[in-house]
Image 1 (cartoon, rainbow, N blue to C red):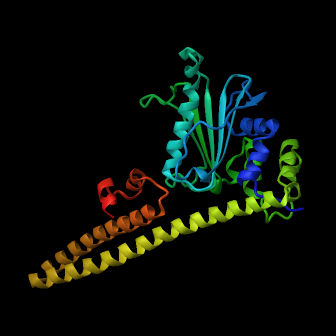
Image 2: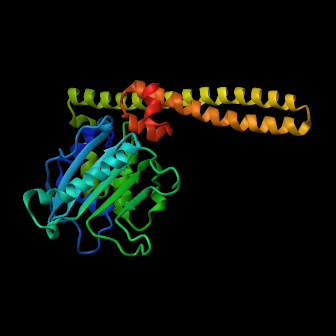
Length: 320
Protein backbone atom coordinates (compact mmCIF):
# COMPACT_ATOMS: atom_id res chain seq x y z
CA UNK A 1 0.00 0.00 0.00
CA UNK A 2 1.31 3.47 -0.93
CA UNK A 3 0.47 6.69 0.88
CA UNK A 4 0.57 10.41 0.11
CA UNK A 5 2.02 12.89 2.57
CA UNK A 6 -0.83 14.36 4.70
CA UNK A 7 0.96 17.72 4.92
CA UNK A 8 0.27 18.54 1.27
CA UNK A 9 -2.66 20.84 0.51
CA UNK A 10 -4.67 18.17 -1.31
CA UNK A 11 -4.39 15.54 1.42
CA UNK A 12 -4.59 17.90 4.40
CA UNK A 13 -7.81 19.42 3.10
CA UNK A 14 -9.20 15.96 2.41
CA UNK A 15 -8.50 14.77 5.97
CA UNK A 16 -9.40 17.84 8.03
CA UNK A 17 -11.55 19.89 5.67
CA UNK A 18 -14.02 17.15 4.75
CA UNK A 19 -14.27 14.98 7.88
CA UNK A 20 -15.55 16.74 10.98
CA UNK A 21 -14.91 13.77 13.25
CA UNK A 22 -11.21 13.77 12.38
CA UNK A 23 -10.91 17.52 12.87
CA UNK A 24 -12.65 17.27 16.26
CA UNK A 25 -10.29 14.51 17.35
CA UNK A 26 -7.30 16.60 16.25
CA UNK A 27 -8.50 19.77 18.00
CA UNK A 28 -9.21 17.96 21.25
CA UNK A 29 -5.76 16.38 21.05
CA UNK A 30 -3.64 19.48 20.49
CA UNK A 31 -5.58 22.20 22.31
CA UNK A 32 -5.27 22.77 26.08
CA UNK A 33 -9.01 22.33 26.73
CA UNK A 34 -10.21 21.62 30.25
CA UNK A 35 -12.24 18.51 30.99
CA UNK A 36 -15.85 19.09 30.11
CA UNK A 37 -15.05 21.72 27.46
CA UNK A 38 -14.01 19.39 24.66
CA UNK A 39 -15.20 19.97 21.09
CA UNK A 40 -18.33 17.88 20.56
CA UNK A 41 -19.64 19.17 17.23
CA UNK A 42 -18.34 21.33 14.39
CA UNK A 43 -19.60 23.53 11.60
CA UNK A 44 -17.24 24.54 8.78
CA UNK A 45 -17.02 28.28 8.07
CA UNK A 46 -16.22 30.24 4.93
CA UNK A 47 -12.42 30.17 4.60
CA UNK A 48 -11.71 33.47 2.85
CA UNK A 49 -11.03 36.15 5.47
CA UNK A 50 -7.60 37.56 4.62
CA UNK A 51 -6.16 39.26 1.54
CA UNK A 52 -3.56 37.65 -0.66
CA UNK A 53 0.04 37.98 0.54
CA UNK A 54 3.20 37.25 -1.50
CA UNK A 55 3.86 34.02 0.37
CA UNK A 56 0.28 32.92 1.04
CA UNK A 57 0.53 30.10 -1.48
CA UNK A 58 2.90 28.38 0.94
CA UNK A 59 0.30 28.53 3.70
CA UNK A 60 -1.24 25.34 2.49
CA UNK A 61 -4.61 25.10 4.08
CA UNK A 62 -6.91 27.27 6.05
CA UNK A 63 -9.62 25.16 7.70
CA UNK A 64 -12.08 27.20 9.76
CA UNK A 65 -14.90 25.96 11.95
CA UNK A 66 -16.91 26.68 15.09
CA UNK A 67 -18.14 24.25 17.74
CA UNK A 68 -21.03 23.70 20.13
CA UNK A 69 -19.55 26.23 22.61
CA UNK A 70 -19.52 28.91 19.87
CA UNK A 71 -15.73 28.83 19.80
CA UNK A 72 -14.01 29.38 16.48
CA UNK A 73 -10.98 27.41 15.27
CA UNK A 74 -8.52 28.22 12.51
CA UNK A 75 -6.17 25.41 11.46
CA UNK A 76 -3.29 26.28 9.14
CA UNK A 77 -0.59 24.11 7.62
CA UNK A 78 2.56 26.03 6.69
CA UNK A 79 5.53 24.58 4.82
CA UNK A 80 7.96 27.52 4.61
CA UNK A 81 8.19 29.86 7.59
CA UNK A 82 8.78 33.60 7.37
CA UNK A 83 7.96 36.43 9.77
CA UNK A 84 5.11 37.28 7.42
CA UNK A 85 3.30 34.13 8.56
CA UNK A 86 3.45 35.21 12.20
CA UNK A 87 1.77 38.51 11.34
CA UNK A 88 -0.74 36.72 9.13
CA UNK A 89 -1.67 34.32 11.95
CA UNK A 90 -2.22 37.28 14.28
CA UNK A 91 -4.32 39.05 11.64
CA UNK A 92 -6.40 35.92 11.06
CA UNK A 93 -7.03 35.50 14.77
CA UNK A 94 -7.94 39.15 15.32
CA UNK A 95 -10.24 39.22 12.30
CA UNK A 96 -12.06 36.09 13.46
CA UNK A 97 -12.37 37.50 16.97
CA UNK A 98 -14.05 40.77 15.94
CA UNK A 99 -16.15 39.35 13.08
CA UNK A 100 -19.39 39.21 15.17
CA UNK A 101 -19.31 43.01 15.66
CA UNK A 102 -19.78 43.46 11.94
CA UNK A 103 -23.31 42.18 12.45
CA UNK A 104 -24.08 44.68 15.22
CA UNK A 105 -23.63 42.30 18.12
CA UNK A 106 -22.39 43.34 21.58
CA UNK A 107 -18.83 43.03 22.85
CA UNK A 108 -19.84 40.38 25.36
CA UNK A 109 -20.91 38.17 22.47
CA UNK A 110 -17.38 37.90 21.05
CA UNK A 111 -16.45 34.25 20.73
CA UNK A 112 -13.26 32.52 21.82
CA UNK A 113 -10.89 32.01 18.89
CA UNK A 114 -8.11 29.44 18.59
CA UNK A 115 -5.53 29.49 15.81
CA UNK A 116 -3.46 26.34 15.34
CA UNK A 117 -0.49 26.80 12.99
CA UNK A 118 1.23 23.54 12.09
CA UNK A 119 4.67 24.38 10.69
CA UNK A 120 6.80 21.98 8.67
CA UNK A 121 9.80 24.22 9.27
CA UNK A 122 11.81 25.72 12.14
CA UNK A 123 10.18 28.98 13.26
CA UNK A 124 11.51 29.58 16.78
CA UNK A 125 15.26 28.97 16.58
CA UNK A 126 15.99 30.17 20.12
CA UNK A 127 13.69 27.52 21.61
CA UNK A 128 15.68 24.54 20.40
CA UNK A 129 13.96 21.77 22.38
CA UNK A 130 10.38 23.05 22.30
CA UNK A 131 7.98 22.30 19.45
CA UNK A 132 4.68 23.42 21.04
CA UNK A 133 4.18 27.15 21.59
CA UNK A 134 1.08 28.68 23.15
CA UNK A 135 0.38 32.42 23.08
CA UNK A 136 -2.36 34.20 25.05
CA UNK A 137 -2.86 37.86 26.15
CA UNK A 138 -1.03 37.94 29.51
CA UNK A 139 -0.39 40.39 32.34
CA UNK A 140 3.36 41.06 32.16
CA UNK A 141 3.79 41.49 35.91
CA UNK A 142 1.46 38.62 36.78
CA UNK A 143 1.61 35.94 34.04
CA UNK A 144 -0.96 33.84 35.87
CA UNK A 145 -3.60 36.37 34.80
CA UNK A 146 -4.70 36.18 31.16
CA UNK A 147 -7.44 37.77 29.09
CA UNK A 148 -9.82 35.29 27.53
CA UNK A 149 -10.53 35.89 23.88
CA UNK A 150 -8.04 34.19 21.68
CA UNK A 151 -5.14 31.77 21.76
CA UNK A 152 -2.48 31.05 19.16
CA UNK A 153 -0.80 27.64 19.03
CA UNK A 154 2.31 27.01 16.91
CA UNK A 155 3.50 23.42 16.40
CA UNK A 156 6.92 22.89 14.78
CA UNK A 157 6.86 19.42 13.23
CA UNK A 158 10.66 19.10 12.69
CA UNK A 159 11.21 19.46 16.45
CA UNK A 160 8.52 16.98 17.46
CA UNK A 161 9.67 13.82 19.26
CA UNK A 162 7.09 11.37 20.67
CA UNK A 163 9.23 10.91 23.79
CA UNK A 164 8.85 14.61 24.64
CA UNK A 165 5.09 14.25 25.20
CA UNK A 166 4.23 11.70 27.84
CA UNK A 167 0.76 12.72 29.02
CA UNK A 168 -1.15 13.41 25.79
CA UNK A 169 -1.42 10.21 23.79
CA UNK A 170 -3.73 11.53 21.06
CA UNK A 171 -1.52 14.55 20.41
CA UNK A 172 1.42 12.19 19.90
CA UNK A 173 -0.60 10.00 17.53
CA UNK A 174 -1.83 12.87 15.38
CA UNK A 175 1.62 14.46 15.15
CA UNK A 176 3.11 11.08 14.30
CA UNK A 177 0.53 10.82 11.52
CA UNK A 178 1.69 14.19 10.15
CA UNK A 179 5.40 13.42 10.46
CA UNK A 180 5.70 9.68 9.75
CA UNK A 181 3.16 8.99 6.99
CA UNK A 182 4.49 9.83 3.53
CA UNK A 183 5.44 8.24 0.21
CA UNK A 184 8.32 6.36 1.85
CA UNK A 185 6.04 4.63 4.37
CA UNK A 186 6.26 0.87 3.89
CA UNK A 187 4.41 -0.20 7.01
CA UNK A 188 2.04 1.95 9.07
CA UNK A 189 2.88 1.84 12.80
CA UNK A 190 0.45 -0.38 14.69
CA UNK A 191 -0.29 2.37 17.21
CA UNK A 192 -1.83 4.50 14.47
CA UNK A 193 -4.05 1.76 13.11
CA UNK A 194 -5.46 0.92 16.56
CA UNK A 195 -7.23 4.28 16.90
CA UNK A 196 -10.37 4.61 14.79
CA UNK A 197 -9.76 8.23 13.85
CA UNK A 198 -6.13 7.75 12.85
CA UNK A 199 -7.01 4.57 10.98
CA UNK A 200 -9.62 6.49 9.00
CA UNK A 201 -7.17 9.31 8.27
CA UNK A 202 -4.59 6.82 6.99
CA UNK A 203 -7.16 5.34 4.64
CA UNK A 204 -7.90 8.80 3.26
CA UNK A 205 -4.25 9.41 2.26
CA UNK A 206 -3.87 6.09 0.45
CA UNK A 207 -2.56 6.86 -3.02
CA UNK A 208 -5.22 4.70 -4.66
CA UNK A 209 -7.92 7.12 -3.44
CA UNK A 210 -6.71 9.88 -5.80
CA UNK A 211 -7.11 10.38 -9.52
CA UNK A 212 -4.20 10.86 -11.93
CA UNK A 213 -5.01 14.57 -12.15
CA UNK A 214 -4.99 14.93 -8.36
CA UNK A 215 -1.70 13.08 -8.14
CA UNK A 216 -0.18 15.43 -10.73
CA UNK A 217 -1.33 18.43 -8.68
CA UNK A 218 0.15 16.79 -5.58
CA UNK A 219 3.53 16.30 -7.30
CA UNK A 220 3.50 19.86 -8.63
CA UNK A 221 2.91 21.18 -5.12
CA UNK A 222 6.00 19.44 -3.77
CA UNK A 223 8.06 20.63 -6.76
CA UNK A 224 7.09 24.23 -5.97
CA UNK A 225 7.98 23.83 -2.30
CA UNK A 226 11.34 22.28 -3.19
CA UNK A 227 12.12 25.05 -5.70
CA UNK A 228 11.22 27.76 -3.21
CA UNK A 229 13.46 26.32 -0.50
CA UNK A 230 16.37 25.69 -2.84
CA UNK A 231 16.20 29.17 -4.36
CA UNK A 232 15.91 30.93 -1.00
CA UNK A 233 18.77 29.00 0.60
CA UNK A 234 20.94 29.54 -2.46
CA UNK A 235 20.50 33.30 -2.41
CA UNK A 236 21.21 33.56 1.31
CA UNK A 237 24.25 31.28 1.05
CA UNK A 238 25.68 33.24 -1.89
CA UNK A 239 25.14 36.58 -0.17
CA UNK A 240 26.75 35.37 3.03
CA UNK A 241 29.80 33.95 1.26
CA UNK A 242 30.38 37.05 -0.88
CA UNK A 243 29.95 39.45 2.01
CA UNK A 244 32.18 37.43 4.32
CA UNK A 245 34.99 37.12 1.75
CA UNK A 246 34.93 40.81 0.87
CA UNK A 247 34.83 41.84 4.51
CA UNK A 248 37.81 39.68 5.45
CA UNK A 249 39.90 40.97 2.53
CA UNK A 250 39.21 44.62 3.30
CA UNK A 251 39.74 44.08 7.01
CA UNK A 252 43.16 42.51 6.54
CA UNK A 253 44.29 45.15 4.07
CA UNK A 254 43.26 48.06 6.25
CA UNK A 255 44.65 46.46 9.38
CA UNK A 256 48.08 45.74 7.87
CA UNK A 257 48.34 49.15 6.23
CA UNK A 258 47.57 50.99 9.44
CA UNK A 259 49.85 48.72 11.47
CA UNK A 260 52.82 49.33 9.16
CA UNK A 261 52.23 53.08 9.18
CA UNK A 262 52.40 53.15 12.96
CA UNK A 263 55.73 51.37 12.81
CA UNK A 264 55.37 49.83 16.22
CA UNK A 265 54.00 46.55 17.46
CA UNK A 266 51.23 48.19 19.42
CA UNK A 267 50.03 50.20 16.44
CA UNK A 268 50.17 47.16 14.20
CA UNK A 269 48.11 45.10 16.65
CA UNK A 270 45.54 47.84 17.07
CA UNK A 271 45.37 48.38 13.33
CA UNK A 272 44.86 44.74 12.55
CA UNK A 273 42.20 44.43 15.27
CA UNK A 274 40.37 47.53 14.08
CA UNK A 275 40.66 46.47 10.47
CA UNK A 276 39.29 43.06 11.21
CA UNK A 277 36.40 44.54 13.18
CA UNK A 278 35.58 46.94 10.35
CA UNK A 279 35.97 44.15 7.84
CA UNK A 280 33.58 41.90 9.73
CA UNK A 281 31.07 44.76 10.01
CA UNK A 282 31.42 45.56 6.33
CA UNK A 283 31.13 41.87 5.50
CA UNK A 284 27.88 41.68 7.44
CA UNK A 285 26.59 44.74 5.59
CA UNK A 286 27.58 43.31 2.23
CA UNK A 287 25.79 40.12 3.22
CA UNK A 288 22.64 42.10 3.99
CA UNK A 289 22.92 44.01 0.71
CA UNK A 290 23.38 40.82 -1.32
CA UNK A 291 20.47 39.16 0.45
CA UNK A 292 18.24 42.21 -0.06
CA UNK A 293 19.11 42.36 -3.77
CA UNK A 294 18.26 38.69 -4.18
CA UNK A 295 14.94 38.94 -2.33
CA UNK A 296 14.04 42.11 -4.21
CA UNK A 297 14.75 40.39 -7.52
CA UNK A 298 12.53 37.45 -6.53
CA UNK A 299 9.62 39.87 -6.06
CA UNK A 300 7.89 37.80 -3.35
CA UNK A 301 8.32 40.15 -0.39
CA UNK A 302 7.56 43.82 0.18
CA UNK A 303 10.33 46.33 0.81
CA UNK A 304 9.35 46.57 4.48
CA UNK A 305 9.56 42.78 4.85
CA UNK A 306 12.99 42.75 3.19
CA UNK A 307 14.01 45.56 5.55
CA UNK A 308 12.94 43.50 8.57
CA UNK A 309 14.90 40.49 7.28
CA UNK A 310 18.16 42.30 6.43
CA UNK A 311 18.31 45.33 8.73
CA UNK A 312 18.64 47.74 5.79
CA UNK A 313 16.32 50.73 5.52
CA UNK A 314 13.56 50.83 2.92
CA UNK A 315 15.37 53.77 1.29
CA UNK A 316 18.58 51.75 0.95
CA UNK A 317 16.69 48.82 -0.55
CA UNK A 318 14.92 51.08 -3.07
CA UNK A 319 18.33 52.21 -4.41
CA UNK A 320 19.60 48.65 -4.97
